[in-house]
Image (cartoon, rainbow, N blue to C red):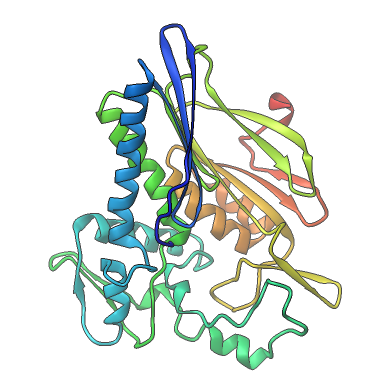
Length: 326
């Protein structure tokens, strides 16, 4: 996660004695939008300022872009010694490892150890060699992350290993913002951290917050609009970053087990009660593919999924009926 830069736009809408207050920012290296329902714009700004402060607090614990964070210190001491971390950081890493186990390593926070041999900026003219691809993931492996609950330490077994919480951290931050604002009396809001969306309460109209799901192959077409009632959604996509070799499309989302880019899908949207789990699962499902990914989701209680494959076809988990939300 990159250092926070703030660029904001303030808007508010008044209805039924309440204000819907929105601020657009640029945080964690990504677009960030915060909307709250408050009694007036002053309270709305206070709530959003709290959210911004919470982002900064967590970023200074888990960002791998800031050298002083606990996660950066864990990576710096890989192959050397365990690093004691706050319980919040320890618990997040422990939950991330559980998602790795659930997805058979398709999601792996040690992906930051990967050599960046794939380029998606138009500069690649040929695929890397099989040897280079294999070597690029040699240091990856959630099994090599050692947790000591009693000492509250994290240790990376091999020198050169690194942790990156980008695939779960933004979702975690969205959840923490919701929890914080609820505890401060903000009974309704929606946070959007670059596509990691968590909503609670209702709009000033009394209706739930809604999210539109578009087909990336035809961005002007919304194929479903879902209500978000105290729930979250996250979308992972490769429709803007990819390369094509020998007629095959390779996404920027790399399978940490093989070093090869994921194929066959352009977007995955996961619905859950927590943005953290939606965030991590979306990445894992993208790597697993349509059939294996949907099979996994269909076994998980309270999780829904919509996949758009590279032919533009839409696939859904058993608990989602798109026709109902057209």
